[in-house]
Length: 293
Image 1 (cartoon, rainbow, N blue to C red):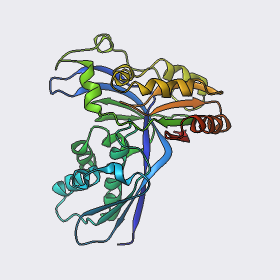
Image 2: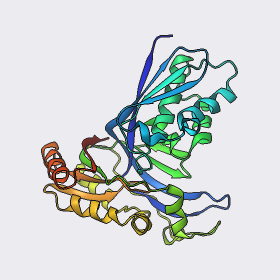
Image 3: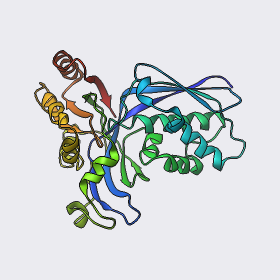
């Protein structure tokens, strides 16, 4: 088997509404999701055993590799497909961990796409989707790795035609555990939020033609996890403020459960200028210009 590679693109929640908590304990969500150009890279090579090696500037953030979602996803797929060809994974890690941009989930989804290629499976094979769901709530959307609306606990996905948005991603270097942010909502199983009690699905443009229409729809959405995340890591407020001070920004918000925040900008030049300004003031932060789509 020749070496195969996949990019694991950062996931950005342009909107995130928490509708309530289901009886099974999972939270019911509605989120408009986009993906960024910045990414990890995962490579699969022939090997008699399933292994994972991590390199790159953020390799140390991966922790115990035995718990890595890449291996969890591969094992989940192997349980449903006897004789599945596995191999040795190498992860070139660039995205920050526990950052609200689905880094680990994107890596797991890339592993599933690589195994699909190595075993001549279609990406719409239901066994891939099942393995993604078994691995983590964000893995199904990362398996698609293109703009969509994510609903339920992450299992219901509807592709959308999103325009390309010049953007800046900023992470202050502090991890935020997703479970802690959801716990701060203090929702009991079966309890609805104010959104869930009077739920109306997002009204999104049907095509990617009008950026102003998309901006209006995104601005109307919000992120229900932003406030509880700032209780846990107040530095998120500093990140939002830094983006809000940037010239040419159209919208500023936190992604997922944080601490990464994003800004949508009028053009790539404005985004690059914001990166230079923020990096100069906060050299320890992770700051990247990108395009969301």
